Length: 432
Ligand code: NAD
Image 1: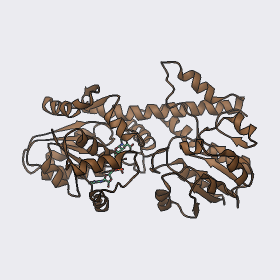
Image 2: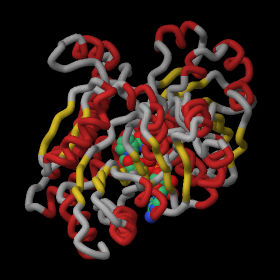
Image 3: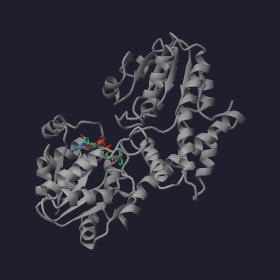
């Protein structure tokens, strides 16, 4: 049993905290958002993540997981402290590490004995060195500590499964004492542990996310070629993916990636490279292709409707991907804003993300389901590939729409089936 402190109770922090608690550790989870902590202390979960509520409730009752809005509580009570705060983009594309710095200072001021301080937030290489320097500057006296990089690879929507069944655990550590503690902490998961120096671990995270973004932009580039050549990108991806050297994952053509990780991590990696004198042209292209996919979706809507002004457009999906309510850098939000600027009236629905979207968008008629969204709309646009949309009654949708027009930004239906049902159906990379 270890005493674990987790600072930042967002998607990563809360999941990390509850999973360590479930594995038999005593965990204290902190956030500087007092409202969030009050909610958590009442047993409410501030965001949607399948299975999370039950697990938090179980571990709260067992007192293996407690919440606080005071970092000092976590530092005093714990030997290992995970930093899980946000690292969003600055204007210039670099990672905004101000929360990481602030937390490091506060940890330093509260330390009274040896601590392992673990950066789990996604950060650029050399952040570990900066955390070390900050703690040395702000600690009250020469208390011993180690900084470890332990990047997180969970996927929102499957975060608990991913935390209990990771493909690998990366530990960037430069002292055997901290390595032993980290190995013990992760031993119950029986997953491969890759031990590296701190810079290497930090690069592994940025390299992994950037590579996934490369795959998405690559297949989108192929999709754009398929559209010009009357070929089908789904079949290209299927056949490519059967090659074990390539793999099928992340070869889904569509309106591009969004979310709180890929866009900012690609940006931060490009920025880090340029700071070190390397022009990461490949990633610049990946970013450009991704931006272009949103314009391609917009133009497909425009092609189908001719004039956008005063048309009613039904949007299906607001979250950046299915099974989450996270709308950070969501393609849907960008598309809606662009369509509103062009004079469209927007109706929209998402199985989980409506509440968050309401805080971000104005002038949108939010609906209770796909059918209400389709009713009297001039077309329906699929932006997030929720299973609920795959399973909807298409004949009912057709009856409700003013015109049977569907623009599918995620290729969830077969073109031949949609044609057979009498839809004007446009998707990404399925030919002319
Ligand atoms: P999030 O915004 O959901 O959570 C961050 C939390 O940190 C918030 O609750 C915020 O209030 C809190 N916080 C900020 N400053 C604080 C401070 N000074 N003291 C205490 N708490 C503070 O973010 P997230 O999605 O959990 O991401 C956290 C980090 O993990 C980021 O670096 C992200 O890139 C990385 N990551 C995210 C995912 C993901 O799928 N969300 C996956 C892997 C890695």
